[in-house]
Image (cartoon, rainbow, N blue to C red; front, side, top):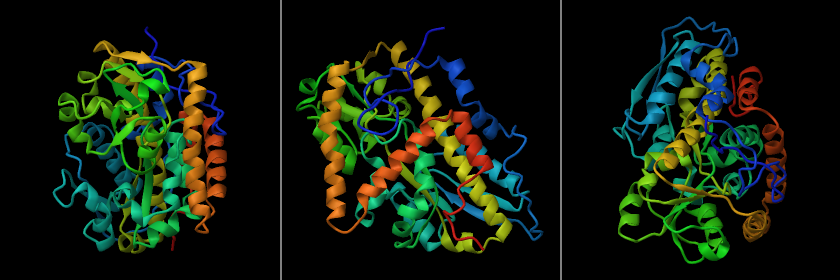
Length: 397
Protein backbone atom coordinates (compact mmCIF):
# COMPACT_ATOMS: atom_id res chain seq x y z
CA UNK A 1 0.00 0.00 0.00
CA UNK A 2 1.22 3.47 -0.83
CA UNK A 3 2.81 5.31 2.07
CA UNK A 4 1.64 8.73 3.27
CA UNK A 5 3.85 11.11 5.22
CA UNK A 6 2.15 12.38 8.33
CA UNK A 7 4.40 12.70 11.35
CA UNK A 8 7.61 14.59 12.04
CA UNK A 9 11.05 14.33 13.71
CA UNK A 10 14.06 16.31 15.03
CA UNK A 11 13.69 20.03 15.70
CA UNK A 12 16.45 22.14 17.19
CA UNK A 13 14.17 25.12 17.67
CA UNK A 14 12.12 23.40 20.37
CA UNK A 15 12.86 20.82 23.01
CA UNK A 16 10.58 18.22 21.43
CA UNK A 17 12.01 15.70 19.00
CA UNK A 18 10.30 16.72 15.79
CA UNK A 19 10.86 18.97 12.79
CA UNK A 20 8.88 21.94 11.65
CA UNK A 21 9.76 21.43 8.04
CA UNK A 22 10.42 17.76 7.38
CA UNK A 23 8.35 14.59 7.53
CA UNK A 24 11.41 12.52 8.33
CA UNK A 25 9.43 9.78 10.05
CA UNK A 26 7.38 7.91 7.48
CA UNK A 27 4.04 6.94 8.93
CA UNK A 28 1.51 4.66 7.33
CA UNK A 29 -1.32 4.68 4.88
CA UNK A 30 -4.89 5.04 6.05
CA UNK A 31 -5.37 1.50 7.40
CA UNK A 32 -2.24 1.69 9.52
CA UNK A 33 -3.02 5.24 10.65
CA UNK A 34 -6.37 4.03 11.94
CA UNK A 35 -4.49 1.61 14.18
CA UNK A 36 -2.50 4.51 15.61
CA UNK A 37 -5.76 6.19 16.64
CA UNK A 38 -7.77 3.05 17.29
CA UNK A 39 -8.50 3.89 20.92
CA UNK A 40 -10.13 7.17 19.89
CA UNK A 41 -12.39 5.38 17.43
CA UNK A 42 -13.34 2.79 20.04
CA UNK A 43 -14.09 5.67 22.43
CA UNK A 44 -16.44 7.26 19.92
CA UNK A 45 -18.09 3.91 19.19
CA UNK A 46 -18.66 3.19 22.88
CA UNK A 47 -16.50 0.06 22.80
CA UNK A 48 -14.06 0.78 25.64
CA UNK A 49 -14.29 -1.42 28.74
CA UNK A 50 -13.75 1.64 30.92
CA UNK A 51 -14.25 5.40 30.59
CA UNK A 52 -12.80 5.99 34.03
CA UNK A 53 -15.22 3.86 36.09
CA UNK A 54 -16.69 6.85 37.91
CA UNK A 55 -19.51 5.91 40.26
CA UNK A 56 -22.61 8.06 39.83
CA UNK A 57 -24.57 8.30 43.09
CA UNK A 58 -26.87 11.19 42.14
CA UNK A 59 -30.41 9.79 41.90
CA UNK A 60 -32.40 12.90 41.02
CA UNK A 61 -33.96 13.75 37.65
CA UNK A 62 -31.69 14.11 34.59
CA UNK A 63 -29.93 17.47 34.32
CA UNK A 64 -30.13 19.21 30.96
CA UNK A 65 -26.94 20.52 29.32
CA UNK A 66 -27.68 22.99 26.53
CA UNK A 67 -24.97 22.60 23.89
CA UNK A 68 -24.70 25.32 21.23
CA UNK A 69 -22.41 25.48 18.21
CA UNK A 70 -22.04 27.57 15.07
CA UNK A 71 -21.04 24.55 12.95
CA UNK A 72 -23.91 22.92 10.98
CA UNK A 73 -25.08 19.47 11.98
CA UNK A 74 -24.06 18.05 8.58
CA UNK A 75 -20.38 18.99 9.09
CA UNK A 76 -17.96 16.09 9.18
CA UNK A 77 -16.59 16.92 12.63
CA UNK A 78 -20.15 16.99 14.02
CA UNK A 79 -21.12 13.62 12.57
CA UNK A 80 -17.78 11.91 13.19
CA UNK A 81 -16.85 13.36 16.59
CA UNK A 82 -19.20 15.81 18.31
CA UNK A 83 -22.47 13.83 18.29
CA UNK A 84 -20.88 10.49 19.28
CA UNK A 85 -18.97 12.35 22.02
CA UNK A 86 -22.19 13.84 23.42
CA UNK A 87 -23.64 10.36 23.61
CA UNK A 88 -20.55 9.25 25.57
CA UNK A 89 -21.20 11.99 28.13
CA UNK A 90 -24.77 10.82 28.64
CA UNK A 91 -23.59 7.23 29.04
CA UNK A 92 -20.77 8.12 31.43
CA UNK A 93 -23.31 10.05 33.53
CA UNK A 94 -25.68 7.04 33.61
CA UNK A 95 -28.29 9.17 31.86
CA UNK A 96 -28.22 11.82 34.58
CA UNK A 97 -26.95 14.44 32.10
CA UNK A 98 -29.07 14.90 28.97
CA UNK A 99 -27.78 17.06 26.14
CA UNK A 100 -29.98 19.44 24.16
CA UNK A 101 -28.18 20.11 20.87
CA UNK A 102 -28.29 23.38 18.91
CA UNK A 103 -26.26 23.40 15.68
CA UNK A 104 -25.68 25.78 12.80
CA UNK A 105 -25.50 29.09 14.64
CA UNK A 106 -29.17 29.05 15.62
CA UNK A 107 -28.30 30.45 19.08
CA UNK A 108 -25.11 32.43 18.47
CA UNK A 109 -22.36 33.04 15.94
CA UNK A 110 -18.81 31.67 16.12
CA UNK A 111 -17.67 34.87 17.84
CA UNK A 112 -20.45 34.88 20.44
CA UNK A 113 -19.92 31.50 22.11
CA UNK A 114 -18.00 33.02 25.00
CA UNK A 115 -20.82 35.47 25.69
CA UNK A 116 -23.35 32.62 25.53
CA UNK A 117 -21.74 30.48 28.25
CA UNK A 118 -20.92 33.50 30.39
CA UNK A 119 -24.54 34.72 30.32
CA UNK A 120 -26.14 31.30 30.74
CA UNK A 121 -27.63 31.27 27.23
CA UNK A 122 -25.58 28.11 26.68
CA UNK A 123 -24.09 25.54 29.04
CA UNK A 124 -21.41 24.30 26.64
CA UNK A 125 -20.09 26.10 23.56
CA UNK A 126 -16.93 27.01 21.62
CA UNK A 127 -15.46 30.17 23.14
CA UNK A 128 -12.46 30.84 20.91
CA UNK A 129 -9.91 33.19 22.50
CA UNK A 130 -8.70 34.12 18.99
CA UNK A 131 -11.92 36.09 18.52
CA UNK A 132 -11.23 38.29 21.55
CA UNK A 133 -7.45 38.25 21.57
CA UNK A 134 -7.17 41.52 23.49
CA UNK A 135 -8.75 39.84 26.54
CA UNK A 136 -5.85 37.39 26.86
CA UNK A 137 -2.10 37.48 27.35
CA UNK A 138 -0.20 34.28 28.18
CA UNK A 139 -3.02 32.18 26.68
CA UNK A 140 -1.52 32.91 23.28
CA UNK A 141 1.81 31.34 24.24
CA UNK A 142 0.85 27.85 23.13
CA UNK A 143 0.46 29.19 19.57
CA UNK A 144 4.14 30.10 19.28
CA UNK A 145 5.83 28.53 16.23
CA UNK A 146 7.29 25.06 16.63
CA UNK A 147 5.84 24.40 20.06
CA UNK A 148 4.16 21.03 19.42
CA UNK A 149 4.58 17.99 17.18
CA UNK A 150 0.89 17.06 16.89
CA UNK A 151 -2.61 18.11 17.86
CA UNK A 152 -2.97 15.62 20.73
CA UNK A 153 0.40 16.61 22.18
CA UNK A 154 -0.68 20.25 21.98
CA UNK A 155 -3.99 19.59 23.73
CA UNK A 156 -2.52 17.38 26.46
CA UNK A 157 0.22 19.92 27.19
CA UNK A 158 -2.11 22.93 27.28
CA UNK A 159 -4.58 21.18 29.57
CA UNK A 160 -1.89 20.01 31.97
CA UNK A 161 -0.65 23.59 32.37
CA UNK A 162 -4.06 25.27 32.17
CA UNK A 163 -4.59 25.74 35.91
CA UNK A 164 -1.19 27.34 36.46
CA UNK A 165 -0.98 29.59 33.42
CA UNK A 166 -4.33 30.14 31.70
CA UNK A 167 -7.21 29.64 34.15
CA UNK A 168 -7.08 33.13 35.68
CA UNK A 169 -7.26 34.82 32.28
CA UNK A 170 -10.47 33.00 31.34
CA UNK A 171 -12.07 33.43 34.75
CA UNK A 172 -11.25 37.14 34.64
CA UNK A 173 -13.82 37.49 31.86
CA UNK A 174 -16.35 35.32 33.67
CA UNK A 175 -15.88 32.02 31.89
CA UNK A 176 -14.63 28.50 32.59
CA UNK A 177 -12.86 26.43 29.96
CA UNK A 178 -14.33 22.96 29.56
CA UNK A 179 -11.60 21.69 27.26
CA UNK A 180 -8.87 22.77 24.88
CA UNK A 181 -8.75 21.96 21.18
CA UNK A 182 -5.95 22.32 18.66
CA UNK A 183 -5.62 21.69 14.96
CA UNK A 184 -2.76 19.84 13.35
CA UNK A 185 0.09 21.87 11.87
CA UNK A 186 -0.61 24.45 9.19
CA UNK A 187 1.11 24.11 5.81
CA UNK A 188 1.50 26.39 2.80
CA UNK A 189 -0.74 25.70 -0.19
CA UNK A 190 0.09 27.63 -3.36
CA UNK A 191 0.13 27.55 -7.15
CA UNK A 192 3.79 28.53 -7.16
CA UNK A 193 6.29 26.09 -5.63
CA UNK A 194 7.69 27.37 -2.33
CA UNK A 195 11.02 25.71 -1.60
CA UNK A 196 13.02 28.61 -0.17
CA UNK A 197 12.58 31.81 1.79
CA UNK A 198 13.12 33.62 -1.49
CA UNK A 199 10.13 31.80 -2.97
CA UNK A 200 8.00 32.85 0.02
CA UNK A 201 9.01 36.50 -0.07
CA UNK A 202 6.16 38.79 -1.06
CA UNK A 203 3.55 36.07 -1.55
CA UNK A 204 0.19 37.20 -0.20
CA UNK A 205 -0.98 34.41 2.09
CA UNK A 206 -4.25 33.89 3.91
CA UNK A 207 -3.33 33.55 7.58
CA UNK A 208 -4.95 34.03 10.94
CA UNK A 209 -4.12 36.98 13.14
CA UNK A 210 -1.73 37.27 16.05
CA UNK A 211 1.19 34.87 16.17
CA UNK A 212 0.04 33.04 13.04
CA UNK A 213 0.35 36.25 11.03
CA UNK A 214 3.65 37.19 12.68
CA UNK A 215 5.12 33.77 11.91
CA UNK A 216 4.17 34.02 8.25
CA UNK A 217 5.52 37.56 8.07
CA UNK A 218 8.83 36.41 9.59
CA UNK A 219 9.20 33.99 6.69
CA UNK A 220 8.66 36.74 4.14
CA UNK A 221 5.01 36.12 3.31
CA UNK A 222 2.53 38.99 3.34
CA UNK A 223 -0.23 37.75 5.66
CA UNK A 224 -3.82 38.64 4.84
CA UNK A 225 -6.55 37.97 7.36
CA UNK A 226 -9.88 36.68 6.09
CA UNK A 227 -12.45 34.06 7.10
CA UNK A 228 -11.67 30.62 5.75
CA UNK A 229 -14.92 30.64 3.79
CA UNK A 230 -13.61 33.57 1.71
CA UNK A 231 -10.35 31.88 0.66
CA UNK A 232 -11.69 30.11 -2.39
CA UNK A 233 -12.92 33.19 -4.30
CA UNK A 234 -9.92 35.20 -3.07
CA UNK A 235 -7.49 32.76 -4.71
CA UNK A 236 -9.60 32.61 -7.86
CA UNK A 237 -9.59 36.40 -8.14
CA UNK A 238 -5.87 36.66 -7.44
CA UNK A 239 -6.34 38.57 -4.20
CA UNK A 240 -4.07 36.10 -2.41
CA UNK A 241 -1.31 33.81 -3.68
CA UNK A 242 -1.34 31.11 -1.01
CA UNK A 243 -3.21 29.86 2.04
CA UNK A 244 -1.97 28.55 5.38
CA UNK A 245 -4.13 25.70 6.64
CA UNK A 246 -3.99 22.26 8.18
CA UNK A 247 -4.58 19.35 5.81
CA UNK A 248 -7.90 18.40 7.43
CA UNK A 249 -9.20 21.97 7.17
CA UNK A 250 -7.78 22.32 3.68
CA UNK A 251 -9.88 19.39 2.49
CA UNK A 252 -13.03 20.97 3.92
CA UNK A 253 -12.36 24.21 2.04
CA UNK A 254 -11.35 22.36 -1.17
CA UNK A 255 -7.79 23.65 -1.26
CA UNK A 256 -6.93 20.81 -3.65
CA UNK A 257 -9.07 22.56 -6.28
CA UNK A 258 -7.06 25.76 -5.86
CA UNK A 259 -3.44 24.85 -5.15
CA UNK A 260 -0.89 22.83 -7.09
CA UNK A 261 1.68 22.67 -4.30
CA UNK A 262 1.80 21.89 -0.58
CA UNK A 263 4.91 22.93 1.31
CA UNK A 264 5.17 21.06 4.60
CA UNK A 265 5.85 23.39 7.54
CA UNK A 266 4.51 22.42 10.94
CA UNK A 267 5.36 25.77 12.50
CA UNK A 268 1.93 26.90 13.64
CA UNK A 269 -1.53 25.60 14.49
CA UNK A 270 -4.82 27.06 15.64
CA UNK A 271 -5.80 26.72 19.29
CA UNK A 272 -9.46 26.99 20.27
CA UNK A 273 -11.36 26.45 23.49
CA UNK A 274 -14.75 25.15 24.59
CA UNK A 275 -16.34 26.75 27.64
CA UNK A 276 -18.80 25.46 30.21
CA UNK A 277 -21.26 27.82 31.85
CA UNK A 278 -19.84 28.51 35.33
CA UNK A 279 -23.28 28.47 36.96
CA UNK A 280 -24.26 25.22 35.24
CA UNK A 281 -21.08 23.45 36.33
CA UNK A 282 -21.23 24.84 39.89
CA UNK A 283 -24.79 23.53 40.25
CA UNK A 284 -23.90 20.00 39.19
CA UNK A 285 -23.81 17.36 41.96
CA UNK A 286 -20.23 16.56 42.99
CA UNK A 287 -20.15 13.16 41.29
CA UNK A 288 -21.40 14.58 37.99
CA UNK A 289 -18.74 17.29 38.13
CA UNK A 290 -16.15 14.51 38.20
CA UNK A 291 -17.90 12.77 35.29
CA UNK A 292 -17.97 15.98 33.26
CA UNK A 293 -14.27 16.54 33.88
CA UNK A 294 -13.42 12.98 32.83
CA UNK A 295 -15.49 13.35 29.68
CA UNK A 296 -13.96 16.67 28.65
CA UNK A 297 -10.39 15.44 29.20
CA UNK A 298 -11.09 12.39 27.02
CA UNK A 299 -13.08 14.29 24.40
CA UNK A 300 -10.26 16.81 24.00
CA UNK A 301 -7.78 14.11 22.99
CA UNK A 302 -10.29 12.17 20.89
CA UNK A 303 -11.14 15.20 18.76
CA UNK A 304 -7.46 15.97 18.17
CA UNK A 305 -6.79 12.42 17.04
CA UNK A 306 -9.99 11.25 15.34
CA UNK A 307 -10.74 14.40 13.40
CA UNK A 308 -7.55 16.41 12.93
CA UNK A 309 -4.76 13.84 12.88
CA UNK A 310 -6.58 11.03 11.13
CA UNK A 311 -8.28 13.66 8.98
CA UNK A 312 -4.87 14.85 7.82
CA UNK A 313 -4.03 11.39 6.49
CA UNK A 314 -7.31 11.20 4.60
CA UNK A 315 -6.80 14.71 3.20
CA UNK A 316 -3.24 14.05 2.06
CA UNK A 317 -4.39 11.05 0.07
CA UNK A 318 -7.08 13.14 -1.58
CA UNK A 319 -4.60 15.93 -2.38
CA UNK A 320 -2.25 13.52 -4.09
CA UNK A 321 -5.06 11.98 -6.12
CA UNK A 322 -5.95 15.50 -7.27
CA UNK A 323 -2.37 15.93 -8.54
CA UNK A 324 -1.03 18.19 -5.82
CA UNK A 325 2.77 18.14 -5.49
CA UNK A 326 4.18 17.75 -1.97
CA UNK A 327 7.29 19.80 -1.19
CA UNK A 328 9.70 19.18 1.68
CA UNK A 329 12.37 21.72 2.42
CA UNK A 330 15.98 20.63 2.22
CA UNK A 331 17.87 20.24 5.49
CA UNK A 332 19.78 23.48 4.94
CA UNK A 333 16.62 25.37 3.98
CA UNK A 334 14.81 24.05 7.05
CA UNK A 335 17.50 25.60 9.24
CA UNK A 336 17.01 28.92 7.47
CA UNK A 337 13.26 28.84 8.13
CA UNK A 338 13.80 27.91 11.78
CA UNK A 339 16.25 30.79 12.17
CA UNK A 340 13.76 33.18 10.59
CA UNK A 341 11.06 32.09 13.04
CA UNK A 342 13.18 32.16 16.21
CA UNK A 343 12.76 35.94 16.78
CA UNK A 344 8.96 35.56 16.90
CA UNK A 345 9.21 33.57 20.12
CA UNK A 346 11.82 35.83 21.69
CA UNK A 347 9.91 39.00 20.83
CA UNK A 348 6.74 37.56 22.37
CA UNK A 349 8.57 36.54 25.54
CA UNK A 350 10.32 39.90 25.98
CA UNK A 351 7.09 41.81 25.40
CA UNK A 352 5.32 39.97 28.22
CA UNK A 353 8.32 39.91 30.54
CA UNK A 354 8.49 43.71 30.26
CA UNK A 355 4.94 43.81 31.63
CA UNK A 356 5.75 41.54 34.57
CA UNK A 357 4.46 38.28 33.09
CA UNK A 358 6.58 35.13 33.40
CA UNK A 359 6.44 34.29 29.70
CA UNK A 360 9.87 32.68 29.52
CA UNK A 361 9.01 30.24 32.28
CA UNK A 362 5.72 29.42 30.58
CA UNK A 363 7.45 28.65 27.27
CA UNK A 364 9.99 26.47 29.06
CA UNK A 365 7.25 24.49 30.79
CA UNK A 366 5.23 24.13 27.57
CA UNK A 367 8.25 22.71 25.77
CA UNK A 368 9.07 20.31 28.60
CA UNK A 369 5.47 19.09 28.76
CA UNK A 370 5.36 18.73 24.98
CA UNK A 371 8.53 16.64 25.09
CA UNK A 372 6.91 14.28 27.59
CA UNK A 373 3.79 13.74 25.50
CA UNK A 374 5.74 13.53 22.23
CA UNK A 375 7.41 10.38 23.59
CA UNK A 376 3.99 8.70 23.91
CA UNK A 377 1.91 7.04 21.20
CA UNK A 378 -1.53 8.48 20.38
CA UNK A 379 -3.25 5.57 22.12
CA UNK A 380 -1.07 6.07 25.20
CA UNK A 381 -1.96 9.76 25.35
CA UNK A 382 -5.69 8.98 25.32
CA UNK A 383 -5.32 6.14 27.82
CA UNK A 384 -3.50 8.52 30.18
CA UNK A 385 -6.42 10.96 29.90
CA UNK A 386 -8.78 8.12 30.84
CA UNK A 387 -6.73 6.69 33.70
CA UNK A 388 -5.24 9.89 35.14
CA UNK A 389 -7.23 12.91 33.95
CA UNK A 390 -6.14 16.44 34.82
CA UNK A 391 -8.18 17.32 37.92
CA UNK A 392 -7.46 21.02 38.45
CA UNK A 393 -9.15 22.74 35.51
CA UNK A 394 -12.28 23.32 37.62
CA UNK A 395 -13.13 24.15 41.22
CA UNK A 396 -14.91 21.00 42.35
CA UNK A 397 -17.38 20.74 45.22
